[in-house]
Amino acid sequence: MSGRRITPLLLTISSVVLLFLCMGLLCACSGDSAVSTESEGYKAVDGYYQITQAKAKELMDIEKDYIILDVRTEEEYREGHIENAILIPHTEIGQRAEKELKDKNQLILVYCRSGNRSKTASKILAELGYTNVMEFGGINSWAYGTIK
Image (cartoon, rainbow, N blue to C red; front, side, top):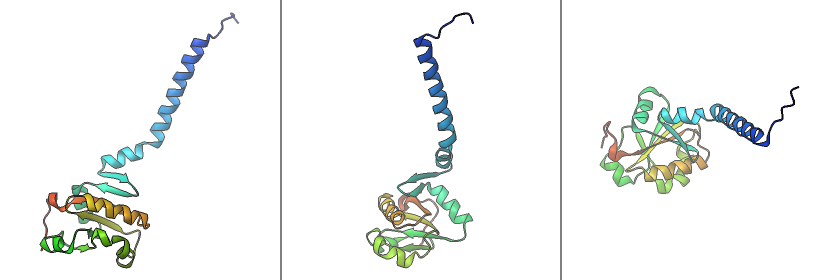
């Protein structure tokens, strides 16, 4: 041994570098699923997912067993809605969901007029135990056609 001593400053710098390396590894291992999920058009929020309208249309085109849920008023629904959508107004979702949406694991695509009521309804569905709720905003910006 040559008698070198580790100074307190060198020890502190080494500890900080080691801490940052460990934090980087932990973040890399645990955080990439949320990043990749969000980059694929999904964002987890309050027990449900917010998705883009393009992602919603893609799911409608490729999935077989799903529900399109319109949570606007009956009058708004009659004025025009997405084809095959069922109506449960957001004010009634808590009372009617479990009677009308039997499978809590089924894919449910939720929309309203502008995106506010669909977020509220999606959160309620998640609180009721529905596990596959995807909220995609409002019909006002839906570019894929509606029916009356």
